[in-house]
Amino acid sequence: MTEMITPVLTSITLQTDAKDLLEEARISHENYLIKQQESDLENAIELYIDAIKADPSISESYYRLASLLLIKGQISVNGALEQCRTALTLEPNNTNAHIYTGYFQCLNGDMEEAEKEFQLAISSSGRNSARPRLFLSKLLLTKIKNKNSNVKDVVKFLYYLLSGSMMIMWDCPSIKMFCKFLANDFSVFSYKTLVETFQKMKLFPSVLDAYSKGLEKTSQGNLFYQKMGDLSLECNNIEASMEFFKKAHEMNPSDRDVLIKLATISQTYFPDNVDETIDYYNTLLEFGIDLDKIYYELGHLYLNKSDKIHAVTAFKLAQEMNPENPYYNNSLAYAYVKAELYDDAIEYYQLAIKLNPDEEWTSIVCHALGSIYAEVKNNYEAAEATFNAGIVLDPKNVDIQLSLGDLFMAQNDLDRAIKTYCDAISVDPENYLTYAKTGLALWEKDYLEEAIVAFHKSVEINPNFEISQNNLGVVYLDGLGDPKESVEYFKNAIEINPNYTLAYFNLARAYQAIGEKALAAEYYQMTIDLNKITEELPEKDVQNRLHGLFE
Image 1: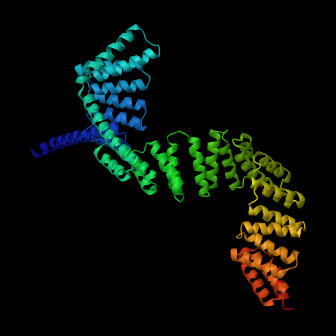
Image 2: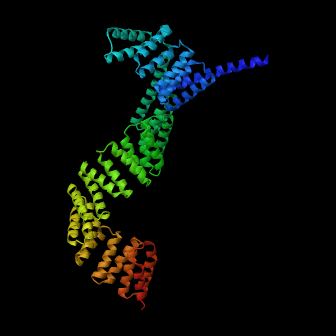
Image 3: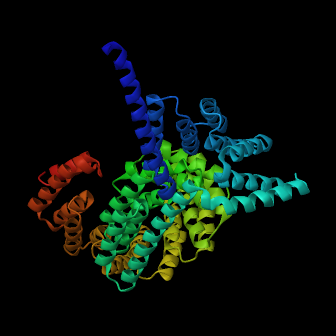
């Protein structure tokens, strides 16, 4: 007797569990339709699957699961139709199964079969046939718009539209869902109105409190977390803003706008969280929107990580998607420079210059390209032409003028170097570097007085520029033969930069010239010790000078 009762009890228990699971799944399904939050979608899918496992004979589980799996992209339309066929096999007169089947047939482009399914749903549902009537009217309207119809279809469309609209009042599921939408929307509207009032009054704590209550009272958690994130960002509370957007993302990972905010805030305010920011941008790639812009941002993030290969790959993808974008070409060229692929860099710098979106910006690109020609390729002619092109585009670009002067210095063309540096001074008379470079060129040309004036001007503008301090000392020591005057400038250079090996060496030479052998020896030894790290000078020469003090 007991052996016969046990299987029956187990079967009843499974059926009860399946119904409970199905009811929970319906609730999550409805919540998803109202809130559009990914967590509800995932939960509904899991519950429908569990309901099928508990009792495979309930048809509703199959077609409802099919609709959500299709939204999720986990099955095709044909897969969804297969689930509906299973449901109809289990329950041939199930109205909803016919409606879902008709809907999926529409997606599949099979309008004739879809019309049959909607007709079957209408005939099986009696006066509760508002939904299949409206679906059928929509199908007929599509046929009319595609001009694949006749007068009969127009009449049928009007009939099913009007009859479906009138019969909606008997469709309890539709009315119930409509009321839920209305109640939720009204709550959201109420809290949003309250918040807008507080915002106008600049009562930000009250705004945040209202958002928190809206979060508790409505189904729109994703919406209110976004609002709280926006408010925190407006109040410059970056960390709180980030946390709110993270919660919004957790509730609805498919919300692209939230992901964009997370990626942008992380990239702007948390530069150390490079990997996290990269993950956000990689997730954004899955949406298939603005891919070139995303790859462009990823390229910069990979450069921050010194990941040259991925940086080149990302910029290359951006450039291939939009080859006419000068900024993509420029960034790709820069990534190639970092990877020491200079020929490729030259190609894309040239493309960026050719596109020339802005003369000032393009002048900077000319500077970068000219530097490769000068420093890597030793092609002075190409470098000069490129620098000059940049100067024509932006005559106020002092940096490129200085680089052109350096190019002439490298060729020992001192007259052209001096002229170019002086041109830079005329553009920016308060730039200490222009005077420093001019002074060096004048010194090389043996224009001692002019060099002293230039170095003094450089030091006057920026007393903390150790190179000009040192060079001014050299002019006094080696040019004018005044070692006592030079000591002050070498000491200044060392005070500014305690690791400036050359300044120690020059100060030792100055003390030697004055006759202060003990101080000279001290600074020669300091030069030797420091030079082991900096390797600025030939160590043997310094040692010979040290030993020569006492011979």
